[in-house]
Length: 265
Image (cartoon, rainbow, N blue to C red; front, side, top):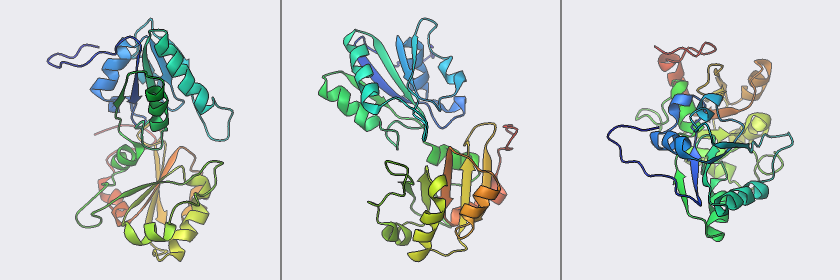
């Protein structure tokens, strides 16, 4: 992929690019990410990467699936990191393609560490994380002067899928006006209880965004108290984001993306 007027770097033989594919919509991959795909000799990609993005790879590129999905048999993280090292040591131009941003709940930092410790040159290519792209497609500004001067990204699932116990939920409830919680759908009831117990208003607006930025995106607007029950009754499914905060109310006015059809203005 050649882009006129841009002097973009090339993947060097024996090196690895860790690239964010964005939250789902193929148009949200960065120019540098698309450029890297076009020149990679080996592409190691995740389950949530859209097929249209994979088609940006060169016709001779070796495509290697390394998808990790909760509750299903998945490649071991150590095996994925070792595969990147071995491909680079074989002199390949390697691109590791991860959904969203590699270093926001994507374990890109761990893969970068493995490469650094093996002496493999690498580049981190940021991507649009679901906590930004998903909110935008749901018509929810990540920050707004009327509602929230801060935003906090949180994981809603620790190793094993349970509610993270190493987070100070009370401090998060008190300290951040807007919480964006990844991988929280299965733990939404206990998380909501923790936040309410810490002082969040039970009637505070909550959005649950499923399949963010994709044609099948669905956004449920509810309250903290009823979010878990409403998400279950509406059949919301992962991957999903949970947004807690007053800025969720902007969805009613700013929902520009026509959900379930995927059309744009």
